[in-house]
Picture 1 (cartoon, rainbow, N blue to C red):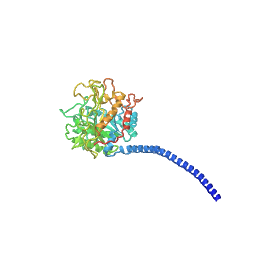
Picture 2: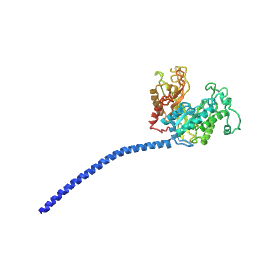
Picture 3: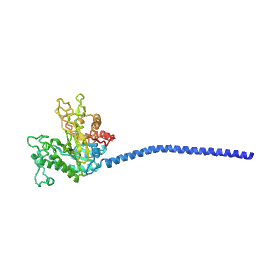
Picture 4: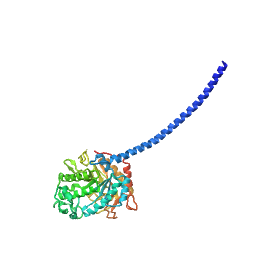
Length: 454
């Protein structure tokens, strides 16, 4: 019994020793496993976070690249608004105003998708063929760098007698079903009849779009710009050219012809048509004729705060909450048509730098037009004001979009400033304002895109 007891005691000691080491081993294994799991979880969170972030970024990038800016033949409201939310005016980009390569760099840097007034030929008849050839060389460079960008050209509300020197191509007569003639355009057949005429610049008049000769000239411009690669046409102040077109039937026919040409010749088989619409829309049979409206910001000076200005609902003839909707040419219904508001240029007053003193005086901002007033502000004020305007427009009317200032003519008689550039200042753009960084910042933080209106 004693030997058995001793054996049992020895066995118990042996098992305790074994159990102790097993426990230690298990403990170490457990600790190592848990430590490993903790580290693994941390790595998962970090790695998963990175993966998710990267995946999310990829998804956003793919969404932006592949879906948000994709259209062909028709354009959905969502895609149209995505473009309008990344609109910037770079007037005469295609004519070579400023430095083309630096403008292309800026477009890519800020993520611009709609270039307003990229071919901005006021009184196009002045040098039409040469300007078109210059644009024909420049447009491919822009489109090669940013293939999904929309370039806008302009057909304006002005014409001068120089139009008499431009020959009408045979294809224009053919498009209108007219016998081909060998002749030039006729100025007197484009402008309004006596008693209705309105001057638009020195020696120029507002065209009457109900007249066949005007339609020939407008159509010629539009299809020329489409052939250059432009996918949007701004038709200027459309509502001062339709005094003899009460229901806009002539506008409807002309725009229909331009769109038909775009359907077979435009890069993505569509051309977007817009114009300034103070009444809220160019309507025909209860529906909008334009793809989107456009209008000046209508900036209101603050008389008791020198050089400062604000946006105010109801001021002047602003378009806010007034953009008329209906069944669009792209087949979708809307209560309010999307629109752009831009920093307009229209000259300077007789009192530059001073407030308006006459009640109801033209919409000068401290004696300047909108873009010239803006260009005269300090770097910090411009940056703050762009943030303010972006927020104000989006909160006031979800159908509106601020068209950023990128490049535009100035009217500044005091200091002779001639052009505003948003580009970073450099050796090639010494007069650059540097506002492109503010634009990039605003667009980069625009998490609400796309944001549909009504």
